[in-house]
Length: 182
Image 1 (cartoon, helix red, strand yellow):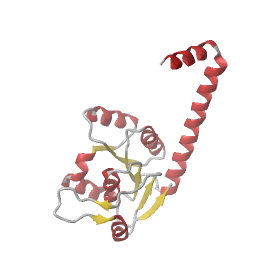
Image 2 (cartoon, one colour):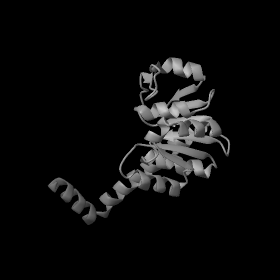
Image 3 (tube, one colour):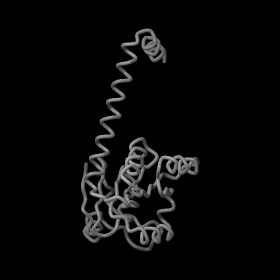
Image 4 (cartoon, one colour):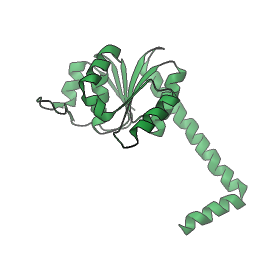
């Protein structure tokens, strides 16, 4: 803790150190923005197209929402079930998200109906857990499923259903999804 206090004090005393830290974080933000823009380009959505994403409350998820809004895409964001979920939903809607749902909602028939009505052509996976399954299940047949540096689960789980879990490869082949890993 003392080392942190000393480095903060050094940054206040020496403006060059403080500015270097600020510049590197600004360049990192610029790099992240460029990376997200290239991801959105990969999806080849047209204005009005619908993008399903998970982990919308992360920094990269928020940036995706903002850039999608700029490009006039509609977004369906899935967030983890947390006690502060209502606040997270409001925050993401304020950033420009069109629809934000908690992960538990993705396991209901309401989600099935919503996805059937919207028929999203693209999905973006930012997590390694069951939210990856939720995104892939939401993408329309013959759509694009892009995973951002994450390992996909071995099985697509249909929680609460009597069906056996299906292997990812069989699921992707059945839905005819174009899968990209970045």
